[in-house]
Length: 225
Image (cartoon, rainbow, N blue to C red):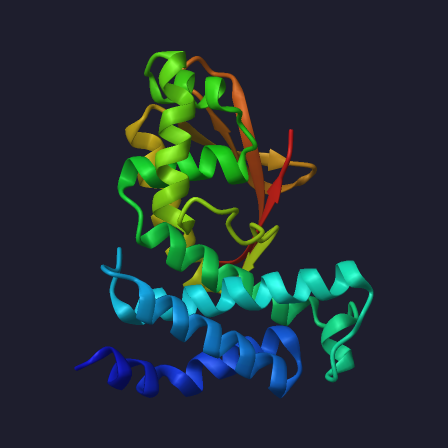
């Protein structure tokens, strides 16, 4: 299939994602059009078309939403600019985050999580990964280019909801972290079931809490230490 054919096939999905975030049809159309321009201009895609386009339109829509909030100017779909859509926005952020992680290499995933989720600086990342400190900034820069073209990625979701989405997120994060020596210790966190991530020296990096129902993890919440 040509890029035009793939884009037209995915257009309803892209519009739906953009509209859920922005709330206005006109703004969603703009986001979809911008996603097409980026897709058309990309000489070679780092991932499959069906992963690139949803992730791109989600990042574009979130950027438009944050820009509009910064100007204090709601769009024609007013409710999207009000804080009564946290669940829908969180779901879209989760989708973008999972797609982004799944297109990175295992080491790229580990570095991305250390930087964007755990808040580690380049020197700390180099220490956790086990490379010279001077290599930390280069490692972070390389992952940034691979994950979002060198720009700032979409905001990381503070929670991930839905057993399937949670499973995909944990599958994308935990194995790469374990590969570089990070451990995941299941324990109570703030009185709730959770886990603490530690580096190879036993120092805490980050934590999460879990909402469990019917024997399945339904939601994970990231916690700072």
